[in-house]
Length: 308
Ligand code: CP
Ligand code: NVA
Image (cartoon, rainbow, N blue to C red; front, side, top):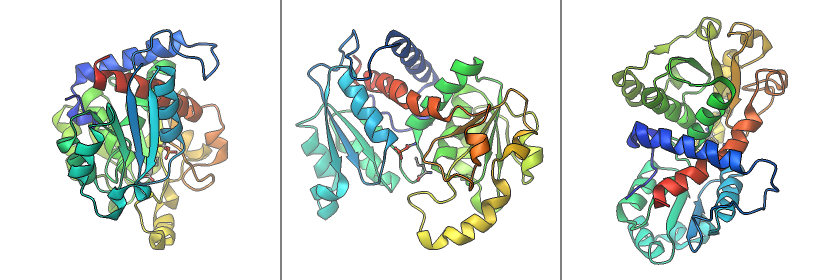
């Protein structure tokens, strides 16, 4: 079963094939209205369930539009409306959904929900974000980097701020795509050792640097994300902000990166917090290309899952 659960669980050849297909499908659609069907309709006759236990704009809309462009149909389900939110087990839900739909995408809190869904489903399951990882986002980010700057292998990616779920998938990608990764943030916000260990074991140079200015020296790509993720308690907001403020990505910090460095943020952003508008709307920023590329990358991921 071709589940797309995480970047480190998908072999590098498949990851590269997915990106190549995404780029080709993007090119083939150039200039068309968003609602126009693709020439190929590989998902014709396929039904895709999109399950959300957390809010979403990009993941929800890009998966839905992507399925439709490829000729398939979707149903968007919120976890709380399903029996899932009222005590039915994940395993039973997975087995039931597998009788109705061809593919399941789920955004949830605890990673165990995703893993149990994949274990018991008879159809492929895609990770649309958990508290720990966000692999679809990083596939779109790699596609975006390579569109602008060519191969990411050997480049220096710097993450500034919270070593969260998006950072974790970047570390997986560092290992699988062969780029170097520097994390800068307070020690309390370090990425989990398991993610760092994966990248290092694959030969990627991973550096933890507490000084953000030193960290971004020579950076080809600077990335950040919200200081308070959906799974973080709102009561921790002020403390987190106070600790993470020195790691804001602003024009002064970007001046220390390479002149042609790109800036990425998966969005939604909190302007003037983790990144300033001057950077988000400035010459280094490719944030809206990243958002667009969710669509193209995920279309290719779905085709890989379904082998169509
Ligand atoms: N980047 C991302 O996953 O955005 P949404 O939360 O809007 O889906
Ligand atoms: N780290 C963020 C990413 C949102 C797309 C969160 O989990 O809320």
